[in-house]
Structure formats: C-alpha cells, structure tokens
Image (tube, rainbow, N blue to C red; front, side, top):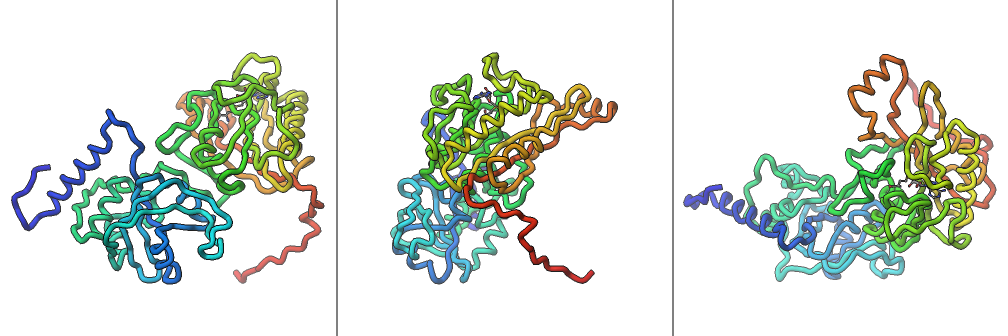
Length: 412
Ligand SMILES: C[S@@+](CC[C@H](N)C(=O)[O-])C[C@H]1O[C@@H](n2cnc3c(N)ncnc32)[C@H](O)[C@@H]1O
C-alpha cells in the first residue's frame, strides 16, 4: 500500500505499519509460534479483582480458551455489564489449573497470568467495535485482529480491510454442545495432530472435545490403539498426560502392546479413547494380533473387541469415561451395523453416557465415481461414525424405564 502524505488519512499509514509488524513476526528464518489475541469476559463484580491480580480465571465453558493462550499472546478484558473493553495485556507463563486457587473461592480454576501496560486503556461501547470488525468476543483473534483491537483501545484506529483475516477459526475447535459433531479438517492449530496420511486417522477435534468434557489438565489419558498418535498430540497440547499403545507402533512415543493386555495397573487412567478397526476394510499392518485383519462379518472380530473392552474397564478409574469411535460396514452387498453391535457389547460392562454422530469427511470413497455407484446400485456411502461414550461405574445402574421423567407438554 502506498504511503500517504495526506494528514487527514493516518489510517492507511497505520495499516502499513501493521502489515510490516505482522510479516516481520512471520519471518520463516526465525520460526516462532504465531501470536494470537484473546478476549476474556468479566462482570462488574470481577473486573477490578482480575485487573489488580493481573489474572484471567474462568470456569469450564472457557477452560479450553484459556489453555489456548501462549506466553506473549495479546489479552483483552471485556466487561459484559458495562460493554467496556480493557487492554492491552500480554500473557505471561503457561495456563494453569488450580482447584485450590483463592480468588473467587476457587470457582474459576483455569487461569493465565498477564502483564499490564504502564497505562491500562479502555474503550466503551465495545460491542459496536466487535460488530464493525465482524468478530465476537468469543473468537480467537489472529495477531492482526489483536493489533486492530489494540489500536482502537489506544484511540488510533487502524484501517480495516474488507478481507480482514482478524479471526483464526481453525486454531482451536469449538466444544460441541450437541450430539452431531462436524469439523472440516482432520487437524487444527499450528502443530499437526497425528498423521493425516495414516489410513483411518482419527479427526483430532473428537479427542479435543472428549478431553475437555471428561478430563482435567494433568489427568492421564490412554489410547490402546494409537495408530499415528493423534491422541498423544492433542493431549500434549492440552496439557494432559497420555499413554498410548499399538500392536505396531508408528512412532517412538507409542508403546508396543496388545490392546487386550495392556501393561498398566488396574484403576490407573482417567479416560480411555479408542478408535478401533471397524473390520478388515483398512490394511493397517500384517501383525498376527492385528484385530483389523478380522472381517466384521465374523463373530471372532466382536469377540476380540470384547476382550479390549474388558481390558479398558480394568485400567479405568471408577466413574471415568471410555469413548469408542466406530463406523459401520457395507461391503460387497453386506451391511454390518458394527456401531450397534459394539454399543451392545460395551453396555455389558459400562453404563451408557451418550452416543455422538461424527460426520465423516475426506474419506477415500468421497469421489464422483463412488457417489454415482452408490446411486446406481442402491447402497449408501458411510456418512458418519458412532462415538459411543460410556462410564465405568460400580454403582447400581438405574434402569431409565423405572425412572419417571416429567415432560413438559405444550399446547399446539
Ligand atoms: C483406526 S486405527 C487408529 C487411528 C489413530 N487413532 C490415529 O489417529 O492415527 C486402529 C489401530 O488399531 C491398531 N490395532 C489393531 N489391533 C490391535 C491390537 N490387538 N492391539 C493394539 N492395537 C491394535 C492398528 O494397528 C491401528 O493402528
């Protein structure tokens, strides 16, 4: 952009500076993690306490957002009661999880410290700014987005281009609130999770959602059939401890073991995630104990999966979650509802928690050839997988039919 001499248009000059700043920090010779911007909400009650302690703390709904912050990221504090935005702060150190934190009686245990500027600036009617630059305070901002907000707070607003790139939509997935999960790509963020060339690789957002729902930072997660290690990479980034096994490990941090006989003590892990073979549709390896060499049409396939379930129950702590990802099979005219069969087996040992439908994307059959074959020969391509969530619980299972539910009925 051309530098302007026109004093009445200082915004263009600022934009030029902004672009320079962003491209300098993206310099490939000195690779460093990209900087982001985070807006955290507060109320009249919490504003002064957070600012005076140089601290953001939150509860479960924004825990994953706090844990996405890195040292040096931009932080803004948004008072929802007064519609005022404060800044600009910079994150210091690592996010933490501290159940015994004194502030707000420990109600908000997830936090990050920040550094204050010499003078804290603020902007009122912040929602108008969010609207103008087309963001929500819940979004994770790019460095550019953070700088645009900083410039407004400092009362020297930067010009905002139409193609603005102020939000980093794929930096962290959303935590899904429904049982239909869909994410456009296998991985997210700055670091790859697993290997998207590995046959049957798990979409990383599934593991991200599960660990933020069912575990806390520092908990131990186990993946007994780890494949390319997606679970390891997600857990490390979200600060969970992780132990992963596979019959044929693909990397050094995966331990060689059979999922039916894991070298772990009883009641030792806080969550198990498993994306098992769905039959013999994918050639993982030729190991004789690879369950993925057994066809889903055989009883033996389900007998071996059942042994894995028993082993998962043994290693799980009481009241903790096992999440099992599984797809159905249609091959050569034969349909096997693998998901329903696995659900049936799991509920012999565990209490059901829920079943999520995970939209399948980027599978090899997603080609015009296969779409046309599916219509011509009247079969369906697999559009989703089942994510079966169960709990190890020795407490008496409450039969849902015996529990009376009071429904609200509305007049039509
Ligand atoms: C669907 S893949 C897992 C994908 C993995 N979650 C990822 O993101 O890359 C299933 C894995 O189960 C492994 N497997 C099959 N039989 C096994 C067994 N008996 N014990 C442990 N792993 C086994 C296969 O080697 C394969 O890597």
